[in-house]
Image (cartoon, rainbow, N blue to C red; front, side):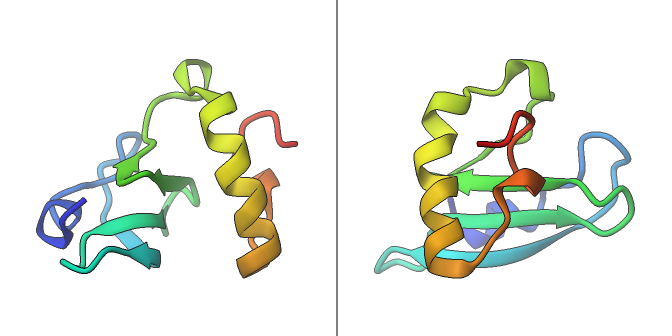
Length: 88
């Protein structure tokens, strides 16, 4: 996902700005993996395969997210409990 597109996103729950933590980029500086965080409601939105996961918890595709989030735990010490509704 392009940085210019990410800058236009807001939290879908309270419409506040999001902070970006980039974990992986491609050669064109597009974000492949990262985290978007709302500082107001404290929700976290992972960016996986260049796609921000900002759907309500009941519509998220956890089998697609789990392998990446579990790898983040090992590589970046990111707690999956904060990212997955039914944490692994």
